[in-house]
Length: 98
Image (tube, rainbow, N blue to C red):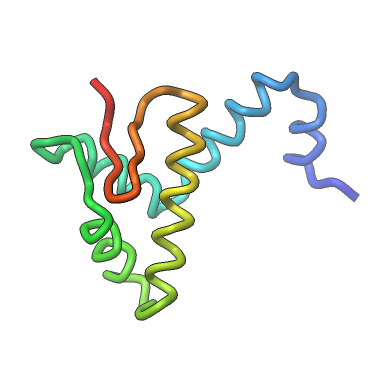
């Protein structure tokens, strides 16, 4: 049984589905926080260590979980970069494209 969101998703075209996924991703609090940080950072860049600090602060997670969560965020930003061109993602940092 599909949820309302699931029904909406399957009714969409492929471009609409990508848009829906991107919008839901950036509405997740940690993703929103990272985008805010990228916007206000003088270099519009966040290093992996900076992201790990943000992930660890206020979440109550630590150790290997912070590393895994950070890796997931890098994967999500890589997908967003591919789909929107708004970010550049390297092994060590995420940068907001001009």
